Image 1: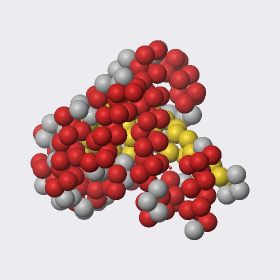
Image 2: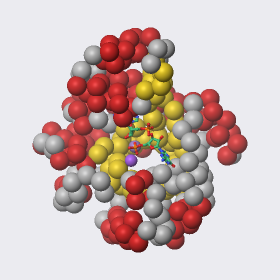
Image 3: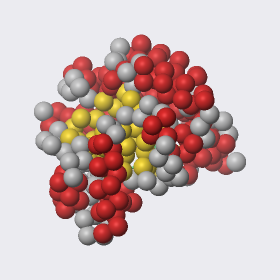
Length: 253
Ligand code: G
Ligand code: G
Ligand code: MN
Ligand code: NA
């Protein structure tokens, strides 16, 4: 209840903010996208992780409002960066399962309209769970977003229920290999083989792959050797404030 009240206030007094983590092309190291990550610093409670407050926001039906704020803010930032620094930059936004509904399609269209952003600049990350909760509505929603040029990525891939049939049923564009696999690369045999299998499968299905949680050169080299297209993790950059991300993009030019 305490966190819930804090969260209601946070929405009102703007103590929520977004940070942005670079996602680089494994081929040349250039920043091709940024993942928007939500942060909340409460005056009394300090920093609270989204792992903690997102579930509360979901239960308290605040996730709709917060999710809308996140989408608009992320679109505004990336529109700015595309205009001034990096014309092909994309932004990746995390969605809660509850956000995947008709209203999302309308709201995403509004965000694209007001920011003048092309749909291809926006990627939406959903978890396997969101698909498996999977009514017909989810399919309709994702199909309409795809028709707008927006792409759908499966976040934390490999940690959910992994009924792989959904990859055929839903218009998924890419997979994000969960950092629990990447963490143990390249020496742990099981993680190495699982990662290899995910990347090979993605390629044969025509899906893109991003590896998350890349922290070491050895991990990056291993992933590159498997031709994993995109890499994300502290090795390439921690999540940065909007201003620091702007500076990182200027330096990367
Ligand atoms: O950035 P960090 O490691 O603290 O993120 C923790 C978790 O919170 C991740 O699973 C991430 O996907 C989730 N998360 C971060 N930002 C958002 C957001 O804007 N919306 C939702 N629904 N989840 C988010
Ligand atoms: O579930 P999701 O993939 O959205 O979670 C993203 C979270 O992963 C963010 O909270 C971010 O802070 C965290 N993260 C990003 N890069 C790394 C990394 O290299 N190592 C670790 N341990 N966490 C990372
Ligand atoms: Mn994510
Ligand atoms: Na993830």
